[in-house]
Length: 637
Image (cartoon, rainbow, N blue to C red; front, side, top):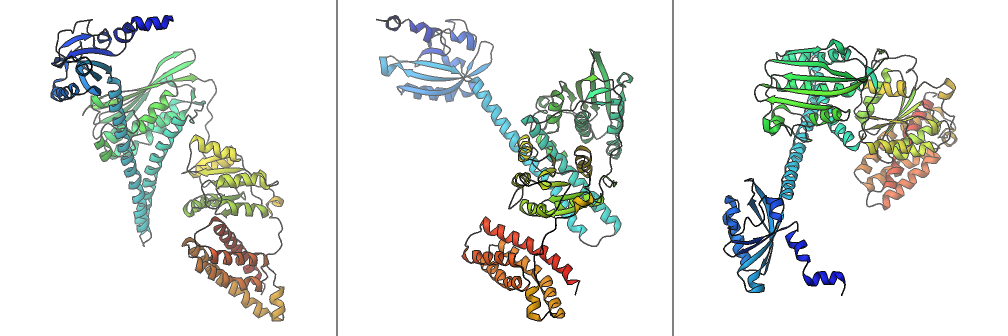
């Protein structure tokens, strides 16, 4: 017999399993009298060994649930084995803990009227479940709030745009335009909050270490809230220690973001009284300046029980706050994380109906270099840097395309348009560009695939700088852009200043030389020899044929696109058949094969296919280019 077998036969394991085990073991009779309990009651419930023997189990059950527990206890007496009966048991310190027992009925096994209760502490599990439910509810509330917050400015923009389409006097137009700007700014703030939180959570957010002076930063920041404060008759003051008139090294943009959040909240939640921003130096130690910034208001205040949750994601102090004041509920979460990521901390003190004070403590290294004040570039700035720069704008959204093209036109850039990656590649085969602005999500060929294809093209096309224009600004999306071969990215929505900085300051794009700007010579895509032969070179007849083609074909191309979008393949085949003779007449031989293929595919197709879509889009784009060429040819007649 082995030592282990002897150990088991002797029953020595009893002490390890029962007496010293982590589970609480009770033996009780059917009336609830405690006949035995192990030593674990001390660690979990606080009672000394054997101190509960002789007492009644029911006396320790939470009174509010006693009747329900007794019913479960009676059911247990009828079964051989019972699992997972939850209850709350009174501890030595007069608190209640959640326990759960599994019961062995001694009546069935030994003929004795008693139960062995194997109890486990499930307090943490219950707390976790409550917290999970609370977090889930907060997240659901956040999604409802954010949906409302996003829809509100979008509805405003859409409605006012409709009003602008009607004839209005200049004052009304200006009022409507201001309302659209205000709504779009609100929308941008909410979206930026979501993107910032995603960036922080993914670890993508990086902090600059540049020189700045709080004596310069604070006044300009406060001035942005002067109008809002004056509108509500609020006094807005600030004080800053003279000792802080020094160069600090850090990220002033992120500090600005934190303070904007705190001050805008103070303005939002204060209806009478004042807001005071105070900046002090707590200490200067080993080249580190510990800065303390407080934002104090006389606003509505925050209930004491809510102070611990206001910095959590998806949370505001009260659901009614969101309904009354709006907002994403992410601002303070982002502020706290931005501060903590810079080795600082943020605190709050508040009393309802009296006011709140948010205090930021943050350390900055002291710098020795002078701050160079740069004059920001204006959106309409035009000089030799921007003039004649050749830009290929690859964007499928009409409004985004119009916005970007309008900005580029103010800088006198030469802008070419491509609605998807495939068209962009075709344009690069015959044109040279200084930079490509590439949308990422597009039909036919997206920005990633287009970039990979461009990088495989010979110089100069293959080496053209590419900037991603993307609404997806998470770490994974940015890395995907760079891996595809893009030089950099600009997240949407972007301002003219953002685009200028990216193109002319960061990437230092300059216009190519005149020789490089010339498109590669390409042979004509049409041949009028057939038309000249059948007409005896009758100039009037040729002119009439050219006019007919230039004027009628665009409508036919529109019908093709509409039929494709509606999956009306019979109509698509019919229109292709109608266009086919014109290809022969004008010697457009390469497109004649294309239109024949489209007609055949459309006749055989029952469901939309990517191949058919690609063929139609390529054909339509090529036709439109030939129409432009033929319009020039027509001028000779």
